[in-house]
Amino acid sequence: MKKTYLLLVAAGLMLSSCSDLLDTEPYDQFTKDNFFTSEKNVELFANYFYNEFSGYGNGGSYGNFYFNFLNDDQGTTGTTEWTYTNVPATSGTWNTPYTEIRRANTLIAALPKISEMSEASKANWDGIARLYRAWQHYKLVRAFGDCYWVDHVLDVTDDGILYGPRQPRNEVMDKVLEDLNVACKNINVNAASRTAVNVYVANAMKAEVCLFEGTYSKYVTKDNARANKFLTEAKAACKVIMENTNYDLNPNFKSNFDQLDLAGNKEMILYKHYVYNVLGHGTVDYTCGSTQVHGMTKDAFDSYLFKDGKPKATTTCDKNEAGKLVKLDDNSGFGEANFVDISDVLAQRDPRMAAQVDHILQFPGCGYARFGGAQSTSATGYGVLLFDTNAMKNTDRQSIGTNTTDAPIFWYAEILLNYAEACAELGTITDADLNLSINKLRNRVGMPSLTTSVAADPANNMGVSNIIWEIRRERRVEMMYCQNDRYYSLQRWNQLELLDTQKHPDQCRGAYVGNLTAADGIDLSQIDVDADGYINCKNGGAERIYDPKYILFPIPSGQKTLNNAIGQNPGW
Image 1 (cartoon, rainbow, N blue to C red):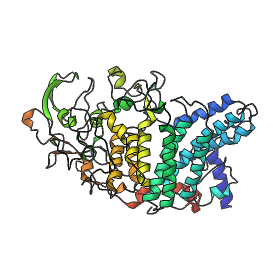
Image 2 (cartoon, helix red, strand yellow; image 1 turned 90 degrees about the vertical axis):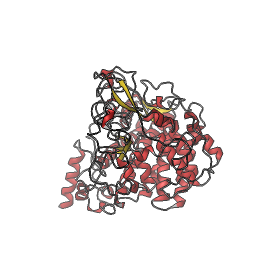
Image 3 (cartoon, rainbow, N blue to C red; image 1 turned 180 degrees about the horizontal axis):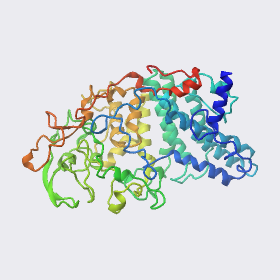
Image 4 (cartoon, rainbow, N blue to C red; image 1 turned 45 degrees about the vertical axis):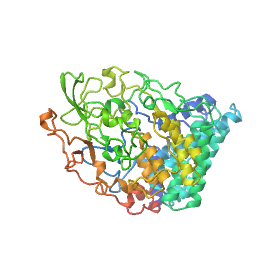
């Protein structure tokens, strides 16, 4: 009777709008025989897959840039806690992928029955659905480890999945790789598009997934054979894109993130286009409005090389971090006032920092309006510049939902980073590989080239080779604020302990203001300045203490109620 009751509950959940493993869409919605009758309808159905890519967000919703604060790159007043510190009853991170996997499986099951479609067209859409299915399973494994591989439309008779234990993560990821390879082989439309899924988007997704699995296998599960297999697949996927002359670096680093239209930008593999009064976002406003922003941490600031290509410990460049007092009118309506200009400090560093950090410090008591309008403040004093532009009217720029800068989803720079890291982790990297990848990124911003004989950096706190450390540094500065890349990189490198604020306090420190006094006309009363002269943005908040269990999320307790065999992740 208990089992029958649970099956009835499962059936009821399947017909509801809630999202979890047991959910289905209503049987009379999207799966009628009279819907999947043409390629046009298949395309309409598959268009929903694009919702996966949030870009800069939809309307007022948060996107996948800037808003991921659980890392050592961005500081806030207080401390951003771990995603879960206790087992939740439900979790969208668990629920939503299974809803989307069902969507993909629905399409895969329908395709063979559509008589009017050619075999090539069926293969294309099957590839796109498999790509989407693989991506959703990858997100589940990344978050929870062991999970369920679902390759058909579930119903209440699927006891093995509904009431069975989770499958080992390795088995699931092997299936993910199979799907990715089918997608890369079969997707055959929109090859030149940068706003539609094509074979190059598929290879970009494969490169990310395989790099994650390869490094996770090497550093977390300690399976070198598996690591080499996936790293080799990642490298091969990158090469497919690197050998296509349609893709290249955009000469202007910042313009990948602050343009109203990314059409014609050869760096874009896939981007999200925004149109005024049709689809807008709020990322620009969130990073320059009157609400305090999360700023770059001292930990991240110190990771940037100096202009001589050397780290802070060995550079001969000027290391002084003190800004200069300037008087200017920021057009915010308050007339001239005193501000702190760090242009000279930024000029000593990798130019990507100047593209990401405003040259005027902005902190409580010393707000700054970059292009006029609202005065913005940052928890660390460093303003977020990367996404901002004066190409929009201030009324649109500083309003939620009316920002229309396009968002990169997959772009060439990330492929070059993935390629270099895969080569380095395989132990095969050469100076020629670096010239094909990292040095293209450095050349773009005028930084000295990297070689495999690079000197050691005393700040290397990851216990890896000099070249791997430098490639990881390059990833950090190139991908600052982007796609939650820092968190997932630390996870797959087994380095989430670096987010422990007690052991690594520089992620709770910001800009240097130790040279300033009240006599300079700068209000320091609203910020906490530590004994070394840096802004202390933790400001009395609790420490974020690392526990090894945080490498995986807990299985929601509601899922254990439905299926006691599902188990729980270590430490939870």
